[in-house]
Length: 266
Image (cartoon, rainbow, N blue to C red; front, side):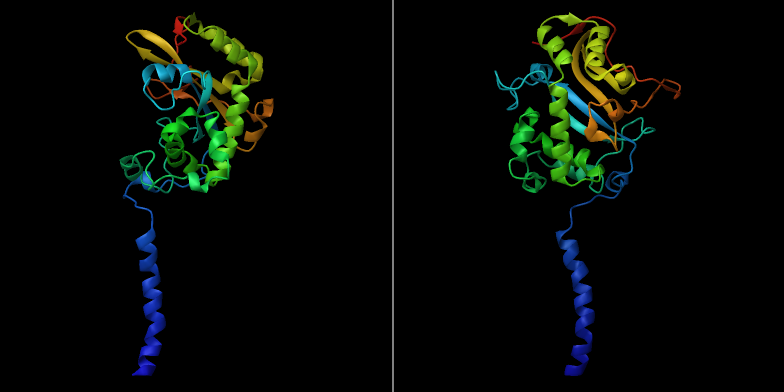
């Protein structure tokens, strides 16, 4: 009998180990949103939001503290596929439905323990949304598709966003125009003055359209995934992917702002 038990023990252990792994696995839901492979993308989009506009829409947010961060702040760093017109390349290895059922600051999804010491504080200097755990949403929706670990992903995003925040012409234009309106050409001119004319095909200006009025809200910049950290050098840029017209044919993305009458929020 002992001999029989001894021969069965290795089989029993080999059966139990996979079950133990299942008990600690991340919750998943069947479907395309849980099976996206990381690292299979073409370019990055550095998305820089206008904090004043966000706070106009969310004045009670913990990330909107008077006298603190203003101007252009980090929304996210998004891996992007050139033909993914609906921007579905997200939540790699995780179920979107499961993640979205959690609160952003939920312990079940919080990744701050995976950052380097002091990294969250550095991120908070350029991403006010850290106050409401925006970093968790950005990690699961986008960072998981980058092929990077949590620490490297947010270190890169912090460096890139800080470099953008320090661009002199666009920051001066936006800050000096608060409460006024601009033409899109003025915003593009400031960006090309900072980034060079070769970058013009690599950024789009985004607006929030409410009641027939257009509020400046964000700038998206296309970056080469291999030369990402050379930004804002000329070789770091990648063209923004085309946008499909009503017939599905690709055409250059013109962003969402009109040519004139762009309101810059106070």
